[in-house]
Length: 272
Image 1 (cartoon, helix red, strand yellow):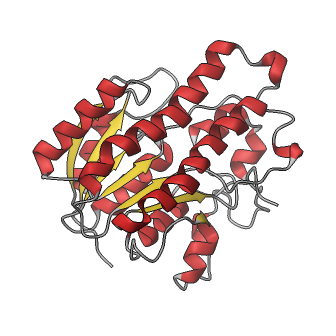
Image 2: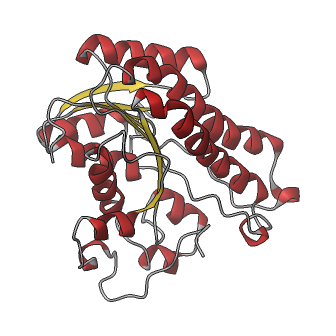
Image 3: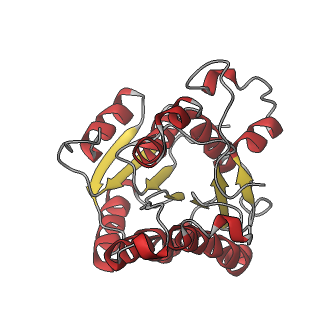
């Protein structure tokens, strides 16, 4: 398996899972388009597109940092044009950018509702739409959405209806586009973690003990890497779970991914 020479366009790549996927692919000498809104250091959040680009280069990849607002169609198209001009095309799109607010209906301001739908649903759709004309020219093209399996159980809605709808909107993009693009050879899949992942989103929205009972973002990056190396015509329309993907690749020991070795892991949302 190798992604050498492939061009991977990643949204929300300034930190967390997006950053980790960028670094994992960079180890093969891949071209990584690091996109996000963050270009200057944030008071509470570590990482910018430029710091991650430097890490990509240090890991052996070729980096291009581009600021993007996935809610704006012109911003998305401009970033893709820059990427194609630099690297000649796009082989893989990772729709990782996401906004979260775990509040019930009365506690969710419409401004925050619009942000979640703008980033999660509109951003995924717009980025995919803009990349498809380039992906269709690639030999093994993939779109990977960081979104959960569609589990229509009221318990996954009742405490955070708006957030759940927005993440399921990303998953509906997977469901529909996988069928739509199958005859063009473009794989469209979703990837979701079995456990919570130690990212800023978990740190800011959950108690500290859940962060300590999480896995490191590297498990999602390793699973994404395995998916990217699969035949796009044979592996599409799946709602992958990180641990299951790696078990299929022969991984049996997951202790390396634990934030706290030996701790009981906290299961992620949306999974039975």
